[in-house]
Amino acid sequence: MIVKKISLAVSVLFSMSMFAQETAKTELELKPVVKLSYLDSIKSTFKKDDMATRVDSLWMNELVSLDIYDDLTKDIQTINSDVTVDEELPTELLKQRLQAMNEKSPFDIQYNQGLENIIKSFLKNRKKSFSRLMALSEYYFPIFEETFAKEKIPLEIKYLAVVESALNPKAVSKMGATGLWQFMYGTGKQYALKIDSYVDERSDALKATAAASDYMTRMFNVFNDWELVLASYNSGPGNVTKAIRRSGGKTNYWDIRNHLPKETQGYVPAFYATMYLFEYHKEHGINPERAVVKNFETDTVAIKNQMSFKQIADLLDMPQSQIQLLNPSYKLNVVPYYQGEQHFLRLPKDKIATFVSNEDKIYAYVKYQSGFKTMSTQLAMKVAPKVKPAVTREAIASSKDIQFYKVRKGDNLGAIADKYNVNISDLKKWNNLKSNAVAFGRTLKIKSEAETVSKNIKEPRTPAIIERNHEEAIASADDKDKNEMQTQEYTVAAGDNLGSIAKKFGTTIADLKELNNLNSNTIALGKTLVVSKTVSEIEEPASTAIALNSVDSFKKKAPSAKSLSEDYYVKKGDSLYSISKKYPGVTISDIKKWNGIKDEDIKPGMKLKING
Image 1 (cartoon, rainbow, N blue to C red):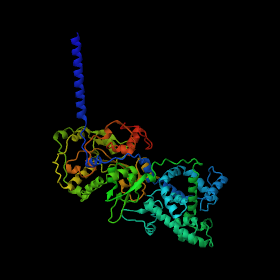
Image 2 (tube, rainbow, N blue to C red):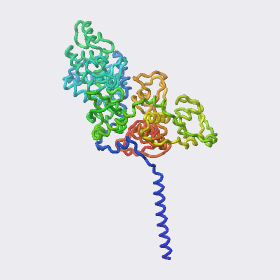
Image 3 (cartoon, rainbow, N blue to C red):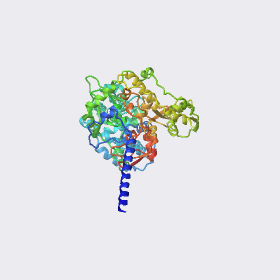
Image 4 (cartoon, rainbow, N blue to C red):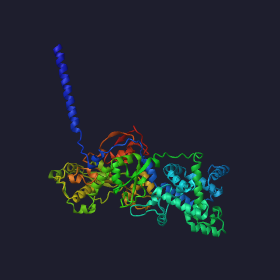
């Protein structure tokens, strides 16, 4: 009996051992072999910095959004100070507060009915805008105050940038005035701001503020009155001088106001109204939104070689929109390098630490990439030989099953292709579509079985010859990229602007302009915009030469993330952008939809469903 029990125990232990070995073997077989790209191999050697500073994606979107600028500019230009506004603010209380502001300011702040109407109008219609502007001010006001303090200019002038540009360095008026302080081209040149094909220093917060400070000092030496300095900033010193003459030589702003251009008549009151809302925001229940990054949490580094924002973003694992925000004076998303001139890159301090600790490797990568730019992509695509997959007779014979799908509201070709496990290019071919736009209600033909078979047929592979002309490699990579991209389009409706469209699709104005090659923020009614591009499937490069030519071609074949379902736990420093980059084919909008997220506020430890 004892022998029998011992035998049974030995057999159980042996079975468990065999099962464990088989399980380990299965897990080993299922684990994919991931080959590091040239970019990843460089980044894996980077020295890491443990500083906790980070730049929140919501904050970045706020800083590059132009919707406040558009709304506030329209308000200031069209507001009627003679119209009484119904808002709870007793006149006597307002007079007391204006008097308190006047006592601690070099400005002559006087109560009048027009100013009261403008303040009440802002309180009634612009509370939310000012809440956002106060968050922005935590980034920009310290820059302004430091410069004004050196030049002995009233610190209250900082509120003028709110009136001028809604604190947006990319703001451009209809007349072409640009930047935080809205300099015209000629005025910018007059005050030594560099404007060329690569750089526009009117959008540089430090240099443009210094130029504005210089202008204010000169105008005060002429008029000796800060209200008249503000008026001259808006309409020019010539118009102020003419208004003084027409008023019979009076030099008080309120005495010559009716002789100034109409816009300037509301300009100084709008400045005072802005100052009032900033000073008494708590009393009116205006709560500033959270500012995650402040100017002192950033730093600059001198660039020793020309490099693109995309290269910097890839190397430092940060969205291009962050780099665009912190470096708004670079027009082409490139930090140039001129002989004898220095250009600086501003980054969050933790990214600066990574950059400085690994400069040699970063410049080596940039130099390596620049070696593949001798031939344009368009020319390379024309001269490159095209290799077509060899389709067998069996595959053709089996392509009999045809399905039909009626396009629903919100559909796009990418989503339909994912649903039936087919390629967008085949969908377009089967239905004679010339673009990625598809009409609501249209019936699409889908040859599902044919596609399933053809997906299993690989292109003939060529030997990996490193010495092969890199022009062919670029052409093949670009041709492949073209087939892999899915685009989502949107037709501009009445009342739309780039800010509202970017908010609707979870992207940024800068990305929309880049996707649609827009040079300004003006969009026409009925225009079709590309609002997103996502990678549907990334196949293994045909040769080692191709694999080394671009960052995108480094990625190996992997199943589309949209076909998987898994949970992701948010880590410290994560943003929806960085999480979406971990899953090919997944966009920020997808993650928000799958998890019911209305904004982009995520916290460490939060569980997110990927294709939930």
